[in-house]
Image (cartoon, one colour):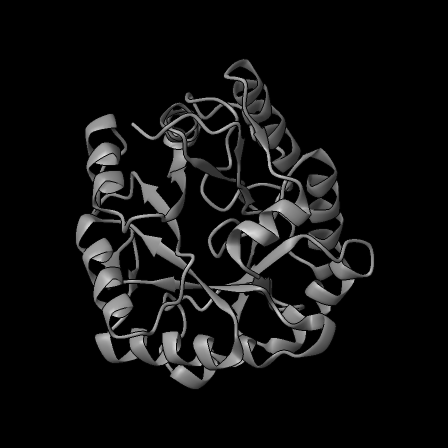
Length: 280
């Protein structure tokens, strides 16, 4: 178990690629909705945000840097210190040019971090294809653009691949990992799997833990106990209860985990502290 750390990264995932307004009216889709919920979350204690953009007309996931730029600029008009991360997901887009377009943003619209999924994987109804060539090209572009990789790990082998990229000089310190457990084809959401993944991380790595669906709260709490950080939001889980009878608000998911953290004597880093910790 990690040594006790009072403070932690509170990584907020407001939108994702899957939730729709038909599934839950509470998921923010339009840029103004996302901006509003992110700023509210920042006021609660969130210090990092994992952003996904949606098409303005269809609500489908989009890679368009203009929409990411609108969201980031809108947030930074009110909060310049919040750590902002964009997605380079391979679920819906297979071209490097599309997946990496958001890395080209500049000025106040430039993201601090970008997601880097470290292998291909299957979700319930969809594959996310991440070839070695694609992963390395994305990592190199992030390095060139001075955007920190948010290393997305769904299984043990992905950690090993991160170490390979580190040896190749593609991922600079400090290393930040999202460990996401409970996906049907990947590491399951239990204490043993989480402990083994933590053990395999590079020395000095910073890590947050998320859980898919009804395992979100469980995995968030396990991470806090183990000295880690938290990934929470409607991207991974749209329900407040394990019976899936009550749709959650992003605010409610954040407030609940803050109550759990407070009971353990832990609290989120300030926005400036989080920036310094992650080196952004």
